[in-house]
Length: 298
Image (tube, rainbow, N blue to C red; front, side, top):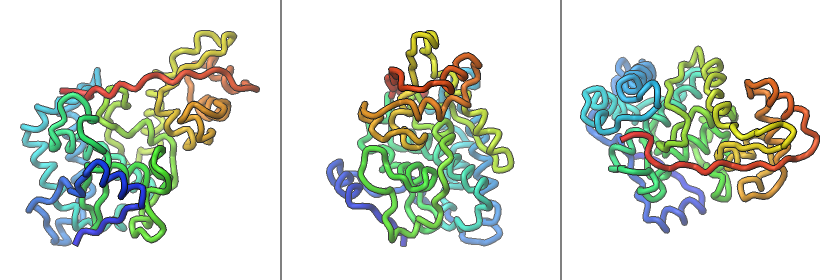
């Protein structure tokens, strides 16, 4: 039987929005044979890479969801997800391999859920989309929220829901990974303001996550002049300010921005902006850009 645990705030939220605890990969292609399961991770990686090449515009980053839904590649991917139910999550490899697996699954599940749940204009059409979109993996239910806030963010919990994602007796704690804040530039939520979809390789993950920081450089756009002291940042840096060592109050418009600015400064490619940020001795006004929730494709 599939096991699933929720903290009290998550239970209350699910009941408020009538969120069903469904999964998107409960179909009859599950295969328990060890020889089939041994390379499931590699086959899923290849399938996600094929989907990305087939569905994502290399220039705009837009996803052709309608085209994907009708493709043989997508049907092949769906077949593989059925086998995730029997995947031994303890066999994913070292920390880098695990992190790459969870990032890729998160992004692929987002695409799958947008198609399966009939999203047309925005993922906000589906109440609690990130709680509802889920796969059955290794005997447990993993939603997008579980993967992001539980596994990839060191069980930090949703930034706007009190408490940890996994409670103290949740068996899924065994797969929680230490936070690497670069994952915020790798995870795709299906919105125009999200980073572009990429597929991450275990043996190249560090370099690929470093390249993902390019998205950050594009969106730190409004340092009009270091002498003016005005900074415009992506809104996700406000939501996840704590992951960058900044005051959690930033997500509510409270607290100081100095720690956040110093945290991202080393990754700014423009030397003039980078040096100015690194040299800040006092907080400066920060504006967080509006988030465009329009679907990142059609």
